[in-house]
Length: 208
Image (cartoon, rainbow, N blue to C red):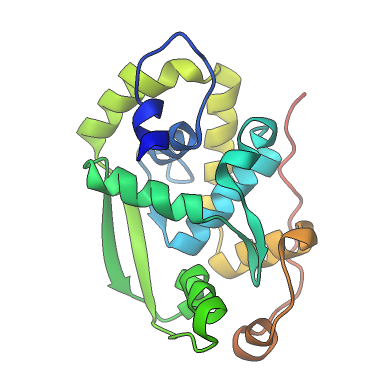
């Protein structure tokens, strides 16, 4: 995948890519305060990356690269899927699939099926994403870290800490209410998933 391979090359250009941001996110600690904190579920990952763009200051640089679109339960980007696959293929990311009690854990996959055949499979599973620590540290130190400022790294960490530890249902409601233009009403949203009330949560504020 060209977008990913280029992102790992050492170069004098400090521009970051979508792949660089994904590496930084997986490398970063979160609410557990441990580096390489795993991210549970493609739905959560999709939303955290979106919030990095919106609330982390990366939208001007990378919004076009991720190409998020309004989807039934919030913003969706096929690029996130592509980058996860690329990271796994080169051994930087492990993906463990487990059963879960809540199909919202993989709701983006369900909506993808729904958009194609109107008959989604409510498969209750969750994919757990974790960066390989040895390989990840090497890639971060030698190819990615120098593309981010200290402020960038701080924002990535704060956003991962804030949203990776949040209950998924609350995260989905937060994104839905805070960024309504990134969602669209649908039969599956109203009749299959249901929808709760706005969580008592204020948006992450970036320091100017």
